[in-house]
Length: 129
Length: 129
DNA sequence: TCCTAGTATAAGTTCCAACTTATATTAGGA
DNA sequence: TCCTAATATAAGTTGGAACTTATACTAGGA
Image 1: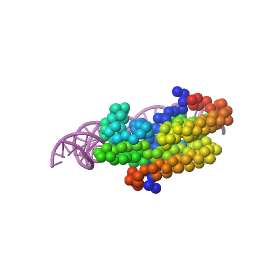
Image 2: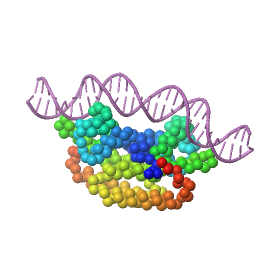
Image 3: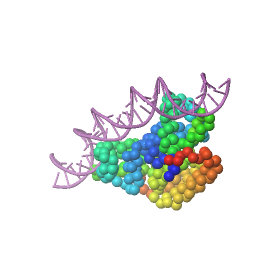
Image 4: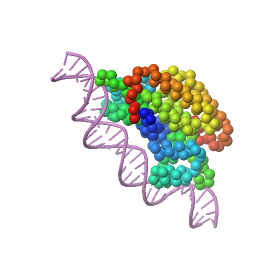
């Protein structure tokens, strides 16, 4: 429940081209909301509140992380949220895929755990999946 | 680029819960449009034309295949279209992921080619975008 | 040939989500 | 304390997409 988001919410969020573009941007690295608003706003011709609202949707879908620093908010891609999307897609893996999918899942899980373990607890207490 | 669709079109299509449900259904195996209409229509309380329109969107996004047989149209999940979605997600793979992702891609390509080679040419000439 | 089954398309309605402008919130500097 | 910067929220509009019903299309079968 405290989970960042379901596959449903994630796909709903990614159904919008502006939000996909935001994800691509954040995939390159963390950025403060203002920078996102500048870049995305310019690219799509939309206002700061519009971008802020998109960020909210992504937040609620568990697709981005936020870290406050002073009055700034740094957004980043949330790999756990994206993993939920990947997981949904895995049901379509080629017919005899079973073993490979299991391997992929295992590897992904291992990486996630390693990544979480590498970071201070304070940065983790967001999703609390 | 006889490819069925872009990642943009695919994500737009998957942004709708009814269409995601249709994909899940087709992921279990081919089904005639009527069966899809019955099952999805019942589940969501929508009409046959509504389901037909959803199937059209999925078709145009390259996410489903169609095979005519008499007056029936058998729909199935298009693994190539879904691969485009997977590919988009790969840009977010964990930092040091490179090698694994390359492996996954290679495996997927091999399987796709094998699958196509197993079928008569007439059933393949669909996309032709 | 006509009828029926299976499916797609046409045309119109309705509702929601993506925008807008305006304002609230919050943190820090002068 | 007040001002400003950075961001989020409030409130209202509007275009488009997801429906609806009605109808067209197409392939067989009687």
